[in-house]
Image (cartoon, rainbow, N blue to C red; front, side, top):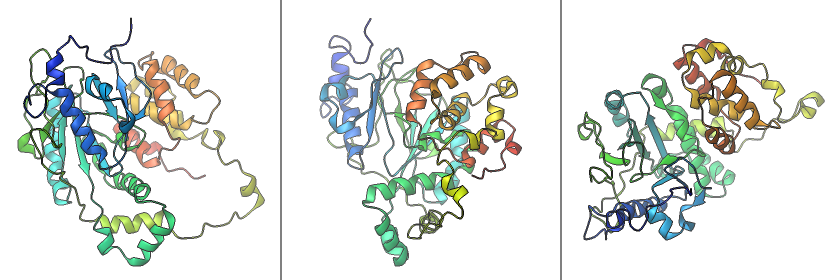
Length: 378
């Protein structure tokens, strides 16, 4: 049997293909396509299609994807924009996610963040922020501006790296409010608005706590309810993107330049021992306490944060001879085959091989084991 990647011509045809200008409630495919086209004006991103059975296609740039695939795909996942942050509220109950968003909203609002809140279609909330960095051209010290220009060949690379750095500055929220911060690793994918999940479509809810219903809003084919989209040209709304301008962004950029030593000469190796030390090896991390814990029965008995720990171990073993085999054995031995094999394979493919101690300590804190992480020196 072939994978169910697309809505067939005879299956809810007009509901997916309705003309967006005249039939706003019969145009899920069109609305989603227009929405993603609008996002593509911000920065490039890649997409992968997911079948109803859970299988994935290879990633492809949105601009290169065939028009019919854009229109008829059941589920589209995308990489984040270069200037985008996402909070994935992943508590076990929808109402808990709503409460957690309401708790952080005043904090983020005071810092200058404007949230786009989406219901995932299952139980979670995805809160997106689109960052505007133009203030840096006016208020950042000119010496730092010149150092940045010498370092980066184009604006997009700088914005992408600064956004990743910015994500680390709000990671204190992840532990306290049941937020999965792993989406802000740029190789990860997130379900797009208007794409199907377990119960229904991912849909836009609003910007403030008052916009978020206390009962999960189910939009799906069965109840003929239609998902909403926040902005895109040519459809029922023409609102511009509401950007976030963090109040402390100039200070954060200054820290970013200093910590990354942008414009500074790197120190020379101090000895031949350092000079000939392998650039990358499993050995120097082999006995890290955090890795030993994740590969122990003690962790297996807890049975929490399994996907995030998979991501950590995939990064740890990314340059071994058989990372998939190692993780399959870990999944079989300690998790009782809880994780799907395709998830393991895709995680290995998507990892960059770099996970910071801050992120690992966050996971350990969720598990009550933050004392295991003392920071690592190379």
